[in-house]
Length: 396
Image 1 (cartoon, one colour):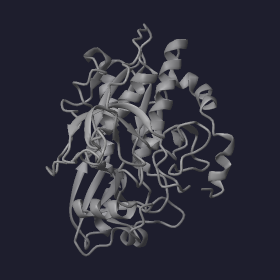
Image 2: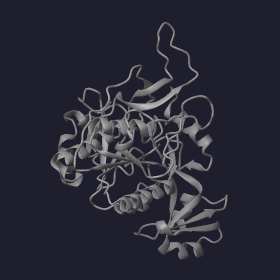
Image 3: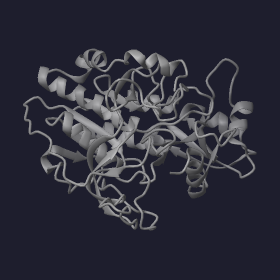
Image 4: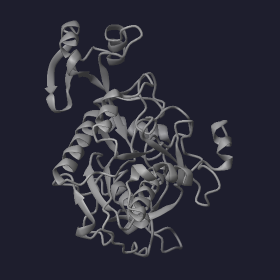
């Protein structure tokens, strides 16, 4: 298995429009090398001050911001610090961060999926007159999977199919099936919940900040148009910020969903306590991953005071895509490591988060209330294990 550093290098080779800030450390921020995001109220001032560094401006009225394209010799982070950061105040501009759930560094899985050779038991059937919707913004869903009958889910966009091999190398892409897996965790633990699916991550687990903002806006509009509120939103993705400050635009987009939507996010998989967003937002439930036996945190899970809940995230079993890659069976066995028939085991905070999201939905349905009303009770259920202190003290 490649190291996190090797995976990061490969990802940056594929996405040359991005660069790491300050270092190639997998726990560092990654930003677009030639763009700024500016709230509309500051756009005129930034345009005037940055004229010598900019090549163009695009206004995104729906999001209330402007996107500035910089010349090739501009240093995004240095420009923000030197020109657009008033002393004691919020910067007038921000980089366009890469958000991701790429295996082995930041966000989603803590490893690679492994096939389950036989079908897992189908989720229990459950019906309730009290509808609770769990929204999942991720890589999409395998729509023809038997765990997802047409009545159990809806799509935010026309095309939400989970992509498998977008680079045509005959291997399953690094995060293909991620959304399908997460939806399966929700179905297993909250079979009566209605799932709302949107695709924001590519099959390599990447989106930029604008993609995430637009997806949150579409989710808000979809909810308003359907007259069904979103009870829970699961975000098994994230990013570190270049200045460790909360990403204000993402915060505003999440707040626009309304106070009745409980947002749950993966804490990330770098085994550190650096604030990881959106999990670290005050109103968001950041979820760390427990070992399979539930006795303590996994070796990969992030931790810290901003992690609000802990749930199993080690060798989780769930729905997956169908795909047969080029690898041969392991010598002397019937195990084909890249032959998936719709089910897999996978590890990561990505899969701890939907366990908490599902419990919010299940309990709200059971009590005929809202996920917001049962939030505190669910947090008590998924409290940190006794030996989590070993992690926060820099444990194993």
